[in-house]
Amino acid sequence: MIEVNDLHKSFNKKIDVLKGITTTIHDGEKIAIIGPSGSGKSTFLRCLNCLDDPTGGQILYNGVDIANPKVDINFYRRKMSMVFQQFNLFNNKTVLDNIMLAPMYFGIKNRKATGKTRQQVKTEVRQKAYSLLEKIGLADKADAYPSQLSGGQKQRVAIIRALAMDPEVMLFDEPTSALDPEMVGEVLAVMKKLAASGMTMVIVTHEMGFAREVADRIMFIDDGIIMEEGTPKEIFDNPQCARLKDFLSKVL
Amino acid sequence: MTFVIQGEKMGNFGLRYQVFKEELIDNHGYEKVLEGLKNTILIAVVGLIIGIVIGIIIASIEVMPKYRILPKILNRLCHVYVAFFRGTPLVVQLLVGYYVLRPMMGLTINALDSCMLIYGLNSGAYVSEIMRGGINSVDPGQMEGGRAIGFKYSTTMFKIIIPQAVKNILPTLGNEFIALIKDTSIVSFVGALDLYVAFKYIGTNNYEFMVPYLAMALVYIVLVLFITLLIKLMERSLKKSDRSK
Ligand SMILES: Nc1ncnc2c1ncn2[C@@H]1O[C@H](COP(=O)(O)OP(=O)(O)OP(=O)(O)O)[C@@H](O)[C@H]1O
Ligand SMILES: [Mg+2]
Image (tube, rainbow over the protein chains, first blue to last red):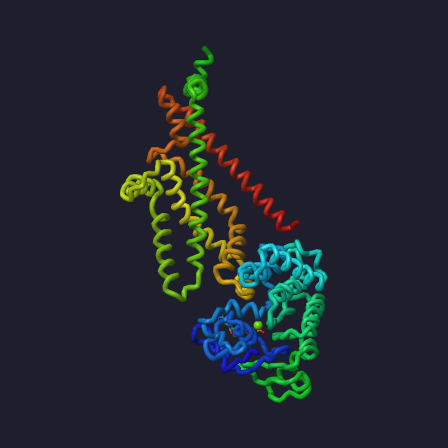
């Protein structure tokens, strides 16, 4: 469903961060991206939805090259929603409004096509938001502001905010790295449920246990390229390149 | 007798006060004062509203990514605008606006409306700087969050960034409002009636200016203290909504 061809990214025409990445992400696949700090993992993820514009290569989303500046990237970003390390919940909105904002906005904008009234859109979106909140056990926080939530709660809300847009792929950039250790579990639990539901997921993570358990494929990115990739078994139990062996010896 | 001697010591304050009181109440001077007060507040309030609108527009242009040519040109224009209104005295802007531009452009608006407009244009230059600081103080992650859910730059700006920026700069905007109130004391240059004109009018009848101008100063002080209090209350209620809502 996503084909990445020879993806390059440099900042300010000088610093080459991605030096040619080619891979295919299949429907329903769970991919974990691991690698040392500064190797380009976040940049790769952010290029997938063009939050950072690629400076070379193609990203074919169901055949459409979304790296082309002429495509309506906002449309594709709703199909590939992203969860950030720092949550990035909207501080001026309640939890409920954070979740409802995008579906409401686009639901109302497209209501001609769907033949729904403004009120119908609102009722539907609200119902869905509440049912998502219930799934993560935070329905009682619907009217709270982000500043009143713990890190783990914020990230769980951020995940269902991304989910509320009915994305086809979800991109996670170190979703648990900014959390206190005791909150990591609750966020990983939500992500595991999501994985079990069949969602296509691309996850940059330092949680090796989680990667091993959930991922179908693991990508080891170093120095701006995919140095090695394979099943968790291949990567963790039988690493080939020296850089990966070295990396694993440090993190495991 | 003693009254007069003591009075003379204080520049005959008692007598002068009597004259002022008579002019203010019996000769309906208070009507002028009230009208002046109304105009002062009107110019400051409308000026601030226009200023906020212009300020938001300019600040939004200034923080826009500038890959294309249009934002670059707009940005240049905004710089000229801000430089002009910050670089010339307000009196000059008033005089040029009212006596030069108004007739040249064939406008028929009266002095009061002209003042509101010119104070708004002037305030816009200052608010834009405040606003830009406010926008820059918002965590860049908020913009990323907006873009990641498929909002355009401008939609994210207006729905997410600017509301937070406005909240951050509310105290500074309060100061801008107080500055505007004080700056209205020169609108008589173009013939608008404000507090200064009202109290001068009261004094002119008897050529007695001591008490009227003292009263004018008091009115300004009370007005500014009152607004300061309102700003404090507003800030506090905003902080509360941060915590409990
Ligand atoms: N906006 C930017 N401008 C310039 N350089 C950048 C920018 N973003 C990232 N870089 C550089 O690109 C390189 C890769 O960054 P990236 O964030 O992708 O690394 P990472 O693998 O995600 O690391 P970490 O594990 O620390 O998050 C780094 O050297 C970084 O300094
Ligand atoms: Mg990173």
